[in-house]
Image (cartoon, rainbow, N blue to C red; front, top):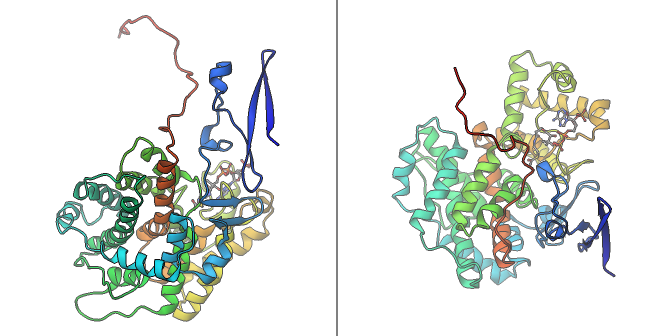
Length: 426
Ligand code: ACO
């Protein structure tokens, strides 16, 4: 049975359809509101606005639920691996064994990055932030692959997916190699995707490198947990840019830039920087807890709180366990991590945090794992981007397949009314 909402403006009534999602989420469809009534809705930060209908990810912030294509994140993190999940997120179904094998083989066809990309990377100073370099390199891939993908052609879209999955991983690790002054590595097609990440990052020409399987497993999980998160800032950016029919690489490059910000993916870097600051300042976690609660102090506890999860972040629960495993396997004894533990324990018992439902989010623990693996702090957000890539691709693909219109919000103008042109006198 279809439901209707009634809106009354100055005595005039307008009927607006209510759209119900497959998990019974309800939305008032205001797409015809302006035509009918002359008014628009105002919702800065889009806290109450759905930008699209999507079949990819379901999340319920109140209940702490996250599902990709109907599968619980807990199941996927435990039973699947990252490439399998990427296939699910992008194409809608779990791959069969032969589809998965084919997908892995097809990704390998595209893991070689054009050598000329190296001269682009050479143009950056060593001190450049890896996210800036990654955004630029992703955009540069457009120049080497100028034919924009026809999203409605299944074969072309499939190839574009494999190409993006293959090349993005390589250029993401190149941002680190550049910053270290190391030679840029090549993908090794005899190894797995996540294992390759470790080789691309850490293998040096001077000797062999064997990553610990516990580490590979933890990274694989982290990538799965980040694979999609419906219409967050970077994903909405990818959809928005793609809605102008800009290409996949250009749209993803914009997503990388959006992810960079400290209120979004940059939070994992901000967490570690905050912990380092606390350590330099004597290691008093309670002092920083007090600062976070002080309304006259702009300081926020990084890695706490979430726009959508208001009870707990289901990803944080999973990754906390993986963090404990990695730390005990690698035998890491790090004062920064002790500060993190103290902060977490105190905040979870503190009324300010409890009453506002501020819990550690996925970034709080992911930063801790990355640090234990020897990944430099400014690479943390790049790690997030590698994990989020399948989500960006899937959302871009869905937006184009659904033939969504160009994204173009409106505004309420609050500036000057018409003024007479007159230069001001000194
Ligand atoms: N530390 C201290 N106080 C906080 C924090 C924090 N980390 N987060 C929110 N609050 C307080 C706010 O001051 C506000 O208090 P008030 O009601 O007394 O005014 C209340 O909690 C609600 O905060 P909002 O900013 O309205 O919450 P919103 O949903 O808009 O913000 C956000 C969510 C941006 C994530 C915020 O919690 C934050 O800045 N956290 C730290 C940064 C972070 O970890 N970001 C990662 C997000 S996860 C991700 O992108 C994968």
